[in-house]
Every structure is written in C-alpha cells, then in structure tokens.
Amino acid sequence: MRIGDFKETYAADEAIFRTPAVRAWMGALGAAMLVFPFVAGDYLLYLANLVGVMIIAALGLNILTGFTGQISLGHAAFVGVGSYAAAIGATRLGLPFYLCIPLGGAAACVAGTVIGVPSLRVKGLYLAIATLSAQVILEWVFSNWDSVTGGIRGINVPPATLYGVPLDTDFRVYFLIYAVAAAFTYSARNLFRTRVGRAFIAIRDRDIAAELMGINLFRYKILSFMVSSFYAGVAGAVWVYFAKVVTPEYFPLSLSIQFLAIVIVGGLGSIQGTILGAIFMTLVPELLKAGTEAVKPFFPDAMSYLFPLRDILFGALIVGFLILEPHGLAEMWQRVKRYFALWPFRS
Image (cartoon, rainbow, N blue to C red; front, side, top):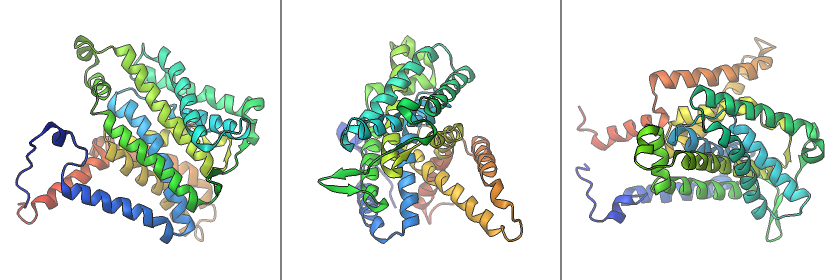
C-alpha cells in the first residue's frame, strides 16, 4: 500500500508524470492509442477522430471558462473561423496542411481578440450574452459571405498530404488528429505551471485580489481569449481535414452548448476532465441515436425527435452535474483512484 510520496527536488515536484507507475500507465495508454486504429472498425475510428477534435476545442474553452472564469457561448464560431481559414489556405493559397492548421489557429485568435476586447468590461451573464452575439454574427457571415466562405455550399477541401501520401481515410487522418491533440494537451498542462497560467487561475478565483497582487487584468483576460480561440481554430482546421468539407451548418449554437457541456461534465479547471468530458459527451448522442433506432419499430417517428432530445439531454447533464457533482467526471475518477489506493484497508 502506498503510504508516502516525497519529492527531493523542485523538478520532481513540478513533473507532470510524477511516479514510475503513472509514467508506465501513460506509456501503456500511448501504445494502446497507436494500436487502436489497426484493430478498430470504420465506425469506431470515426468516433475516435471526432473525440480527438472535440478534445482540442474543449481544452480551449476550459482554459477560458474553467481556468480563467470567463464564460463563452460562442466557441463553435471560433472553431468555424479556424475551419474556413484552413480551407481557404488549402484551396485558394495552395498551402500544405502543416501551414493551414496554424493559419486556422491564428485566424481564430484574431477573431477572439476582436470579440474579447469589448467583452473585458463585462462579466458573468453579460459576458455570456456578448459571446453569444459573436456566435450569431459569425454564423451569419459563414452563411452569407459567399465570395469567401462559399455560402451554404461551403468549401470542399483536398486531403492533407504527408510525404506524398494523402491522409484521405479515417485510418490515416487519425494519426494527424491525435498528434495535434497530444501536443495541445501537453501544452495546456504545461501552461498552468507558468506565470501566465497561474495568473489565469488567480483571476478566476478573485479578480480584484489578483489585480491588487499586480496582475494586469486586461492583459491576461485578453490573452486567455486569444489562447482559447487559438485552440478552437486549430480544432477547426483539423476538423476540415477530417470532414474534407466545411459548411455553416457544422458550427451552430448547439455546438457551443456541447462544448460548454463537455467542460462542465468533465470538470471545470481540469485537463483530465476535459478529455473525459469530450469522450463522454461524444458518445452520449451515439447512445441516444442507438436508443431511438431501437424503439423505432414501436414509435416510427422516434428519429424525428433525435436532435431535440439531444439538446434536452445536454441541458439535463449540465444541470445535473452542477447540482450533484460540480467537479465533474474528473472528481469521480479521483475518488475511484483514492478508493483503490487504500483497498482493502478502506473502511
């Protein structure tokens, strides 16, 4: 039974993977992720790729909402900005995918800065309304600026190519998605060991006290918007190479609600919770779809209620976790680990 955990250096205390057991488990997880696409079917690969994109985007929202305390209801719009920027870079500028992905992040970062600056004077409900207005405006731009976005028709995007090999299947694009997801997860985890990340957390906990300690609220709040939007834009760019097309219908308000549900259900202010929430909230609609198909012989119109039921379920999960488990799936997982760490001696 583990009875002590002592660190002898600052480097050991700040390490991300602090024990040999944790490092071994992470190595096993990495090996399993490399093997997974070789044994999974097309449907599971599709879901896995979707989860990877959701993880990248939801990490950005958790940086803004969970770690900095700035709520946003326009996250899907920033994902859309990144998608369109990457699509335009690939089709009209002829850029390779390794330039289009940061281009999508940079475009969304600029959009996040433009939205974030006027939003810095408000907080709480007023900030939510301000970001909601950004969602509505950008949705209108996606649908009506035909010369740039292609309007409702959207933009068809050629597959990414790496050393002459097109990443044109779910199997091949899986490695691109999870390479980006792993890099951005590691970056997010490291962010909160820096001065910037700790300033974000201080602003979330008590912004007035943070300002009294010398933290520039304007600078760090706008920086939080920029980092969050950059993550969203990169997720949108990766999504383009996964879907091979970008249209306005991919970025509705309901997607912003889904991102918010991911960070709340997974755990606000938790990188691990974001990953668990992305997996859970991606699988929930699929389970709901399977349930409606199962009752279709008894209720022929069951499929017509799928999308309304999905939105209702997302709302119910948000309210349920806020009331019953405010720290989300991350806290539930920690309780399970604590139980088995003391088993069978736990009373």
